[in-house]
View 1: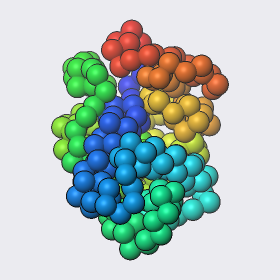
View 2: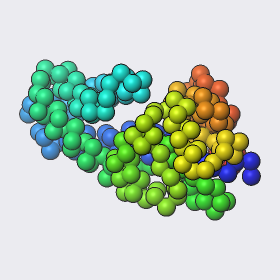
View 3: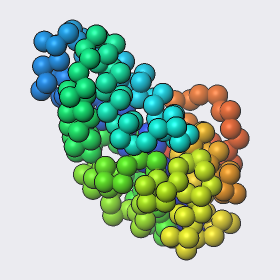
View 4: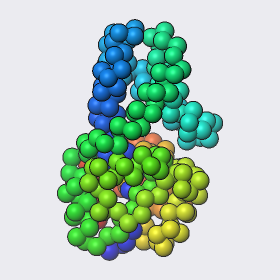
Length: 231
């Protein structure tokens, strides 16, 4: 085998973050009776949350804001769009979201099958994620993914974030892997693919959304089953 160590991203690559987050927010919308607090439609609330979450995550990955600010301000800004200026509710929703989100189990099609296939072929598999340490471990456990991965490298543990090369250097050191036997597999061109390139690692862009690539990965697949053609 050309590669020995496979480094996977988790959210949006294997674990269906969009589906799981939407289900969690729907639960919070119902349980906190947000329809009685000036937010008449869940889909509108989800759209505003998604808008602010994407922009705050970008600021977080670039080092402009800290974790705690990201966690509650995405709720705060979404509520503000409905003229609901309630910091206490925002922080309450933020806590509930991070407690309930990891319990969701939706995965992308063929996730379990491809991980079983790769495990049978004796690849050593790890996760490299910008997600929060406790949250990511809970996701992995509840989704039944824990038995596939030897190491879970988070931004918290490594004190770095993809696409910075330091998180990949930390991952290589922790797993005992060398660059020439390692490959990074992920959906985010700027974090996963550019990050792998920054570290000198081969990459596979999992192009679930079939977008036009703007970063040149070593390989491109459009669904997880296509990994069988490479690995």
